[in-house]
Amino acid sequence: MTATTLIKAEPAAPELPTPRRWSLVYPWLLPAIAMAVVGGIGLSRPALGWDEHATWSAAMRTPAQILDFAGNMDGVIAPYYLFTHFWTAAFGDAVGTIRLPSLIAVVLGTGLVGELGRRLFGPGTGLTAGLIVAAVPQLSRYAQDARAYGIAFFFAVLATLLLYVAVERPTWWRWAAYGAALTLLGATHMIGFLVLAGHVVTVALRRRDARVPIRWAVMVAAALLLVSPLIYLGLTQRGTQLEWIAPLDLHQVLIAPGMIFGAPAAGLLVIGLALAARWERPALPGELGALAAIPPILLIAVSFVTSPLWVPRYVLFVIAPLALLAAVALRGLRWRTVAALILIAAMGFEMQQTFRGPASHGGMDFRKAAAIVQSRLQPGDGVVYGRIGTWSLRAGLDYELRDSAVKPDDLLLREPAAEAGGLDGVECPGLTCFTTDRVWYVGARQAGDPMSNAGDELRAKFKAEYKRTGYWLLPLGTIALYERKVP
Image (tube, rainbow, N blue to C red; front, side, top):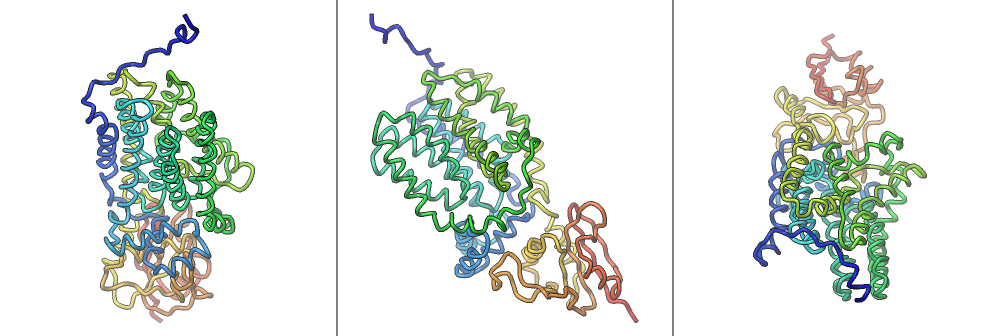
């Protein structure tokens, strides 16, 4: 008897018996359908938020104007802006339409999680992993966001799936597919390249085949080279692109897992299950564990050493390997699997509702703000904006009133953002260069005086020349109507 016969792998729990053809389909199809249902509910309910206004504003420009804008700001997001420009030109710019690419991407990404689980562990495990992903609140939140995060999730999962396909059968065309997915990931969201920190572990553990590390390195180098212009723009624009990120502290580190999932309890349950995962080939859970842990740890570490970079949505893709590991821990435990899925969905239900609130995407409820202005608007009215987030306030009202026959004149604007090549337009230097009889004020609202964000110059002009005849306080927003004083 040889040593090989003495060491036997623990038998895996049996998968549910299914017809072979169906077992190739349901692990990715059913999770994708579930994500389409969950992500599609309330897709158009929240008004466009702060960042989504940047997407709409950029998409309404010509391709030449978008490239000009990219040279000044948001250069790393330029490919997404160009895509959205052509998308809205073809399908319109309604709220649901402009968010639809994100929903499609997250639906496809969820399906790919199921397919990856099927290839690595079996169809039942793939199905469970995909359904866990569909139940995570944060993914449905960014399936409903007109930004690139959902699309980056798709390309990160696709790249991971193609990596495993390539390492099993390392032909050049499979590696080329992997490189293409990496390139598209980097072009969608630069920080998505953190997925490589997990991929390098997978490659290192398969170094017995000399072709694997060599071809992987070639594809990574090619992807980085193709995306290098965006990398350059990202480095040169880092001060303006990421200046809004708050410095990282210990509290943010401690709550990071819950923030990634969008629901702390659901996140801790999935992570707890992932830590309990066991497999006859220990290297495979180790590879997925590295993919789940190393990218956020790196981003947090860099944020402490250099300027802040930590934003939980930047590493949404780590939900995929964690879901796969959790599914491995539940493998063969049918009723416990059902109970775990119900628990994850129940723990995230409140946040699912919160994410679909009217102003859940950041800033005030611009739809309600525009309705207030439009219902009382008179020909000749003007509008001025608060001094904090002026670009988003302006784009938000412009978006909501884009189909209105009568719109207020933007009294301070001297050069539109598209012509100025920036996120906001060029305003009148003095901020008091208007004599209109009726002026609307639209501003962000923080604690304290609801008019504090108007700034000293506007406040002084309003006090000296106008009387306030209308006043509406919204969550995070202030709407006011001023009419010129009668001498």
